[in-house]
Amino acid sequence: MSNIPRSHRPWFYPLITSSVAIGVVVGAPQSAPAAPLWELLLRGAQVYQLYNVSDKEEVQLGKQINQQLIGEQFQLYNNARVNNYIDRIGQRLAKNSTRPDIPYTFQVVKDDSINAFATAGGYVYVTTGLLKAADNEAQLAGVLAHEIGHITERHLIEQMRETAIARGLASAAGLDESTAVPFGVEMGFRRPKSR
Image (cartoon, rainbow, N blue to C red):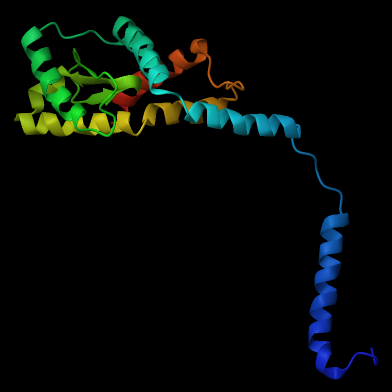
């Protein structure tokens, strides 16, 4: 200690303390990750793949989700005048959205709840309960614009990605059709009940 000048001693003790701490951390046995490194890297690739679903793939997925929702969960409202009215409002709004190039489908479903929801690929649903509760076209347009916003921001795709990762069901290429469609149906069915 006498070889180190007094002016350098204040730095000497923190240096020794830091060196010992680093040695303990580096030298201590580390626990192994639950999954091999290649599997963790593969999961990172899965997130990327699911996040980059093309518009064409999203529209196809939305079509399949729609077929199951309409066939199993909801019944379409059979009034051409009302359906055309909702579609006309929705199409005007969709043309001015940030994703005007995908085909939008606006449908009225028989349900007394005051609600609307959207799934992947441009599918928007409005309940008959909402139509009865709305006072004017501006209110309907506001709701439809909100649902179009979910589509433009790809919220269902993001939710599917997060759910697939959380459940450990994603593959290297993403979700296959047999997994993706049920996820979409589940979320499409759950989403209207969450508002």
